[in-house]
Image (cartoon, rainbow, N blue to C red; front, side):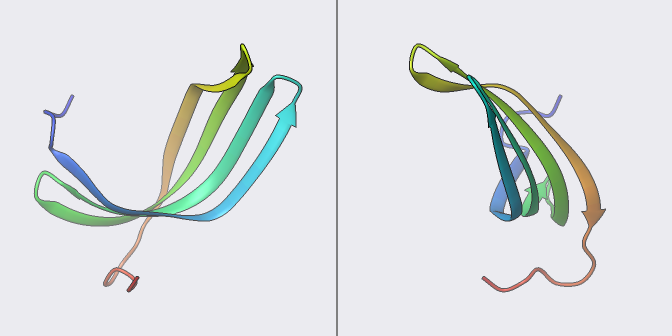
Length: 80
C-alpha cells in the first residue's frame, strides 16, 4: 500500500457514462482519462470504471467500485 500523498490526481475527465437503475440499485459504468502523479512520475491513463449504488433510507450510498486501466496514453497530456 502506498503511503498517504504518494498519488496526486490532477484531472479526471469522464469520456463515457452510462447509468442504469434497477429499483434500489444503481449501476454506473464509464470510461475516464486521468492525469496524475504517482511517486513523482507523471502519468496519463485511461480507465474503465464501475460503481454500484444502493438506495438506503432515501439516500444513495456507494457500496462498491472497481477500476481497470485500459491504456497508458503516449505523448503530452491534452490541454484543458
